[in-house]
Image 1 (tube, rainbow, N blue to C red):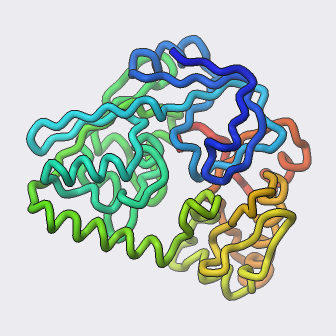
Image 2 (cartoon, rainbow, N blue to C red):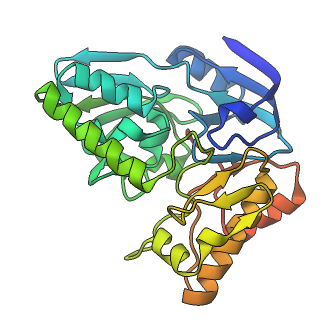
Amino acid sequence: MLLENNFDIKMLTSFKIGGKIKKVYFPSSVDEFVEILKTEPEAKVFGNLSNTLISSDGYDGVIVLTTKMYNVDFYGTRVVADCGIKGPKLSRLAAANGLSGFEFMIGFPGTLGGNICMNASANKQCISDKLVSVLCFDGSEVKKYTKEQMNFAYRHSVCMEKKLIVLSAEFELENAEIPVIKEKMDMNLHFRKGHQPSLALPNCGSVFKNPDGDSAGRLLDSIGAKNMSSGGVHVWENHANFIINDNNGTSLDVLMLMEKMSNAVELEYGIKLKPEVRYLGGNNKIEEELCKKLLIESIKNQK
């Protein structure tokens, strides 16, 4: 298996932010993945490093990247896929096989494992809709979880409750005409381009989760967040719930900007926005304090 020491992670993140990681593993199979996790029980697991902020001061620990785990098998309308395959690739492969159900993932930057952990959704579809079962590692053994056992909810699954690591998943899709499937994919791409920045603009997706009955973007827009910036990062001018790295931004710049955004909404509406962005660090005390204030969750699963 591939192991890199003192690996500069910056260019592998969608934010294009991050320092050196002490050890990075790149497994290519479920067996390798499980072997690593048994050998390195404290390792943090990531997929495509989207929706993730890694400290510019690096991380003195071990991480596992699943991007080389991209095997997919089709059995009629059944699909079994490894955790590291990216959403757009899985969407295209399903379409090529005349299978509908993955159209909404065509514009997702993350991997299947991360999409399952957070029950990723778009345009009234979510990853749990067609899911049958998930193969997970619980720290000691591999177990299969049914859809019902996954406790899916908005941006939530049992993975976040029990610190489960997704290894692979099985889905039941539907037969459909390929032109119809591709039309749905095009509609999803068009919608995404109009509401979210291209990854050509370094970002990590939505910064804050939508509070019950409202939109984080609307709240942020109403308090003038689109005019906010910090160091080398700024709020995207087309949607106030995205932060863009101007190619020289740091993790501290991002966290300071998030604090400005969060404080302004709380001052105006009394609503404490919950971050969707997750953070990995430990070498910068100021960043750690900002994470506590922002209530940023510790990283447990693939993103």
